[in-house]
Amino acid sequence: MFLGEYSRTIDKKGRIFIPAKFREELAKGIIITKGFDEKCLFLFSRESWRRIEEKILSIPVAQRSTQRFSRWFFSSAQMESLDQQGRTRIPHNLIEFAELKKDVVLVGVSDRAELWSQENWEKYYKNADDQFTGDQNAFDELGF
Image 1 (cartoon, helix red, strand yellow):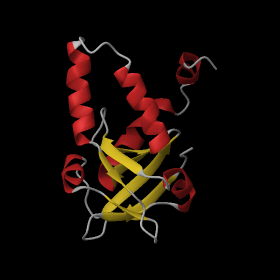
Image 2 (image 1 turned 90 degrees about the vertical axis):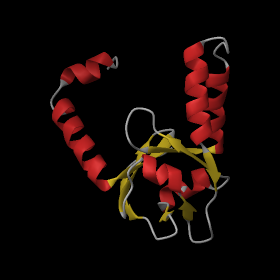
Image 3 (image 1 turned 30 degrees about the vertical axis):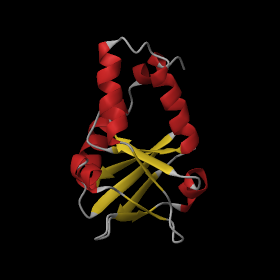
Image 4 (image 1 turned 90 degrees about the horizontal axis):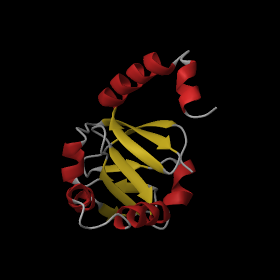
């Protein structure tokens, strides 16, 4: 499970240190792909990726929107691993997509981690904080 927020930097080779709390989950491999609702990256463990893959592949292939999404989502995915120091490489095309600069933020989102540019994360989080702080409807809509 991925929880928390961690500030990191990307080195000149496109590598970042993965938080120790995430490493066990990602030890068997990391699938990195485009986030589909914001300019961020999704990092999945192999197990979580299999669940996503199975769900997408269970949708009828004749649905045009499914095909378009599958092509877009899977074509951007890259399998990476952790090195002995706990770093992983972020492919250059994904760095560009997510507008990552030197300072980045890794965010735990239960079944995945997300990688954001610090600037984009701060904007996103402020907006979310303004929207949800004190909003009981947010919890009511989730059935709490």
